[in-house]
Amino acid sequence: MEPDFTFDFLSTYKLLKGKFNITDPEIYIEELELKIKSHQFSSEPVEEMMEDNSAPSKLFKALTRFFLSHNEYSDKYLFHKLEMRDSEILENINFRYFVFNASGTENSESAIIMLHGLNEKLWEKYLPWAYAVSKMTGKPVILFPLAFHMNRAPVEWSDFRLMNNIVKERNNLLPGISESCFANTALSARLQFVPLRFLSSGLQSFNDITQLSKSILAGEIEGLEKIKHIDLFGYSIGAFVTQILMMRNPENLFTNSKGFLFCGGPLMQHMTPVSRAIMDSAAAEAIEDFYVINFDNNLQRDEALRKMLEKHNQNGEIFKSMISHDRNKELRESIFEKISDRLFCLGLLKDNVMSAEGIFRTFRIKGRKNPGIEIDDFNYKYSHENPFPLLDKLSEDLNETFFRVFRKASLFLS
Image (cartoon, rainbow, N blue to C red; front, side):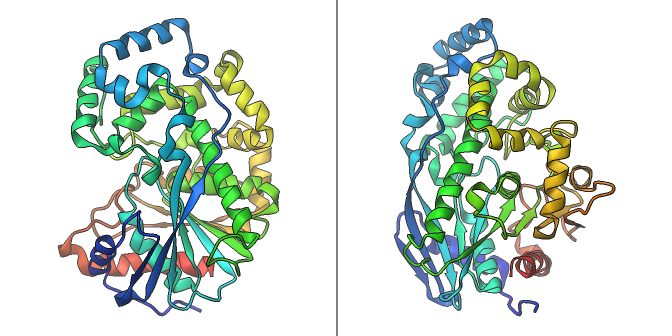
C-alpha cells in the first residue's frame, strides 16, 4: 500500500534543524508528533596500525615528516606529529546515535538503520529523510554515524579558520590540486597520507553497525525492545557500507534484511569522489592508486594492509570484490544474485560521483538475476551531494521530488 503522507519539505527541514541537537537525550517535536531519542555508543577500534607501517616508502615517510614539521596546522590538528593513533581520537570512540520515532511506530517489530555519505559532519540534511521514512513505513529510523564522521569527528575538523589554514598548506605542497577547501581538507589530508584509513574506518563502521544490530535484536536498547528485524537505507558511501553488510551478513543479522541504496551502488572503480563536499583531487588520486590501480602491489609491500585483511578475512574478501570488476568477480556476482530481491538501487541521471553508468555496470550481470535499479532525474539543478537544494523558489518541485524518492524507498522497506 502506498504511503499516504506529505509535508512541506522546506518548512519541515527548518523546523527539524531548529529543534534537533546532538546533546539532548530526548527531543519531542509536537508539530510533527516526532520523538528523537539519542543513545550512547562505545566503539571498538580496528586493530592498531601505525602510520609508519602504512606509508608506501621510506622516502614518503621522510617527506611526510618534513611537511608536518613545516606546516603547524596540518601537524597539530590532523596528525599530531604522526604519534596520535586513531584509537586516541575519543570523539570517534564514544558518541551518540539517534532514533526517530514518528507517531504510529511504537509497536513496530522492525527498524531501519540509515547511513549517510562520505565526509559529512552535520545531521541536518538527513533529519527530514529520517522523519519521512519513519512516518511512511511506521518504523523507527536510526541515524548512525560512520567512523570519523558527523558527531564522531573532532570539532576542529569543522572549524573554518583552522581548516582554511590547512588548505593553504596543502595548496603550497600540491600546486596542481583541485577542489580543495575547508570542508574536505581534514578527510583529504588523512586519506592522502594514509589511504589505509579508508579501509580501517570502513571496518570500524562495519563492526559498529554489527554490534548495534546485535544489541537491538537482543532487546538491549531502550525503546527498541520489540525490534526483531532490521533493514538498511544507505546513501552514497553509506550505500557501499550497506552492500558490504548485506553481502557479508555478519552473524546472520541481515539474512532477511532489505537494503535501499540512494545515490550509491557502484564499485570503487566507478566512483568519482572529487568534490569540495567530499575530497580533493590529491586524496582521490591516492585512494584510486592504493585500492584500484596498485592494490596487489600494496598488498605485497604494506604489512598493515596485509594483516588487516588477513585478520578480517571474510570481510576483506567481500571488500576486495567491491573494488573493481575483475577482483573476486564470481563471489560478488553470486552474492548479488542471492540477495537481488532484497536490494534496490535508486540512482540519479546527473550524479557525477556515483554515476548511473557505474551503477548499471556493477549490477547488470548477464545470465544472472539482478537487483532492482531505477535512474531518476529531477526538474531542477541538483548534485550527488545535494539532491534536494534548500531554495524557496524550488519549493513545489522539491516537495514532489522528495516524496517521489522517499515513497519509493518506504514502499521497498515496508
